[in-house]
Length: 413
Image 1: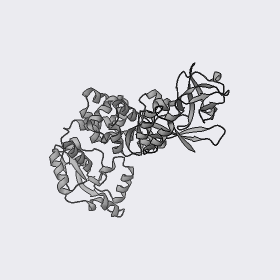
Image 2: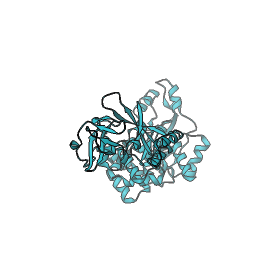
Image 3: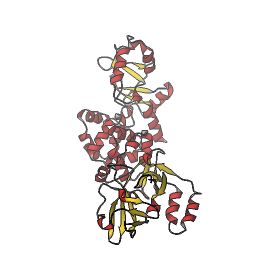
Image 4: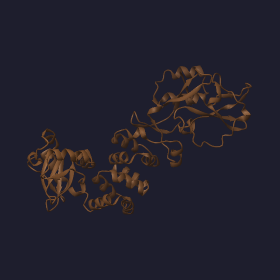
């Protein structure tokens, strides 16, 4: 199987069955709904206008493309519905390299040619994001082909395999027609997705967040710079924004909503489920620079009489973030904080062991109105992973995690 560059094919002569030149190659296109890599259509520039030829009609690519159907039967290229045009939609466009975890610009496209059958076929093999593709395009037609190829052999390749490419399409209708999603991107770590998103233009960021799964979008949004985070949410419809905010950690969601214009925040809250909306409204009542303003309301709290077996069962049902699971808190019938059990102790205990016998001493907590400096010092002094937050009646109301403190310190740098 040989390879050929897209820019080498563009402009090549196209011959009909009589051997006469009927035009030249203007475009190659993929039909993503059928095959995301196979070249399905050839668009030919003729003196009568652009014409569409199925690539299956090409019977030779030597010295030009030879078509086995008469030029008079080639339909007019009056649109590109459902087609992804390689020159128009890829060359000089930004794409997401999910393997390299970055945004890059396409200089050329490498096509894999299979000539083993009667009709040759082409598939997109990779995109070239290095100098080699740029030089090929700049010097095409200006220097002899042999000299250009000799020069290109001295320039290192920078290909990205097609399976590692995520396309960016800002038009919602076209995303659907071309089946463009971000499944590959969604498999990256949220921090990597955030880095990629921050390198995109505003409309491209919106396009990415419109197609990501709610949970993935929420995790990535938490990692995005606060200014960019705010801009992304403001660009989304309130119902879509609400779906994402509901999946965020409550403390992060509350911080985001507090930074948004009041009208935008109200619209998002209105679209949220009643329980999540009430939780957000309660968190928004607290000042952001206090323990209550930083705490997470999703944590593991069990009755003071619970056993290790009951704790394991509760862990299986827990749907909150894993960062809060390093400690299980014990409360009485009034919700009063009674103890803290490190997860490591639970793992070593027999099923019938009372959790109260596994509690860690001393029991460290802070009040809801504790300042950021106060609870950060507690983390440092006692080497904590989580810190329970209590109200004036010692009732457990939330948990601050080490992630929260790290985010807090980063924002101060």
